[in-house]
Amino acid sequence: MTDTTSPAAEAASEPRPEDVAPDAEAPLRKENAELKDRLLRTLADMENLRKRTEREVADARAYGISSFARDVLGVADNIQRALEATGEDWKKQADEAGKALFEGVELTERDLLKALEKHGIRRIEPNGQKFDPNLHQAMYEVPDENIAPGTVVQVLQAGFTIGDRILRPALVAVAKGGPKVESSRAQNDN
Image (cartoon, rainbow, N blue to C red; front, side):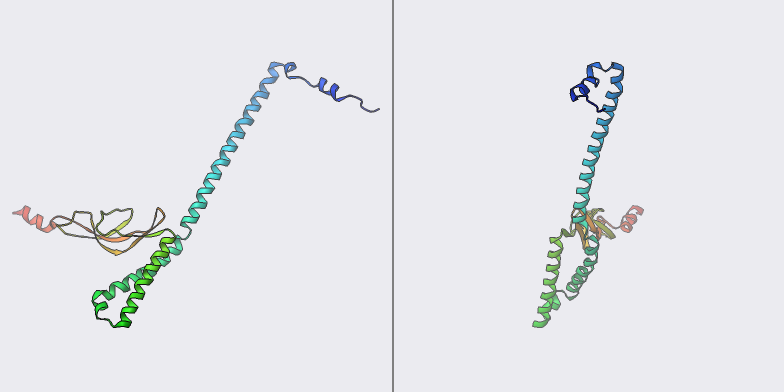
């Protein structure tokens, strides 16, 4: 024999919501609330993952060249040392070929710094600024009564930033300010 029940008969045999006993409805409501909570938590987790991934991708773009940039900074330092070693006196006494060489090295340095800036790498120019331990590394102090204590008076090695991060701190000499310690002790002894 074949089953001859109609779809209307099947629908009539299923329990309707008003036919379900109130005590049987409570577990279904609880399960529904739990599933809804799990769904909302999963959606929140997915949104957090999306945001974190976007941040990581942006950081990788901005800071991915840090290692390469540190290597290139050695080249920039050597070019700067070459320019400082020749000085203005040498430039005045040099023949045309020497002057052309000096100008070529200056141009190379400018192009290198411009290329670094194009990729978000900027030179820190701290001379005359207040010492900032986040950007500078103090190598020694210079006693000078005419300069406020904590002021950068000499840059030994330029520092660089990449984006908002420090790539390499500037190595600096900082003004001690005020009289020397020995002379103030001698005055106190008198």
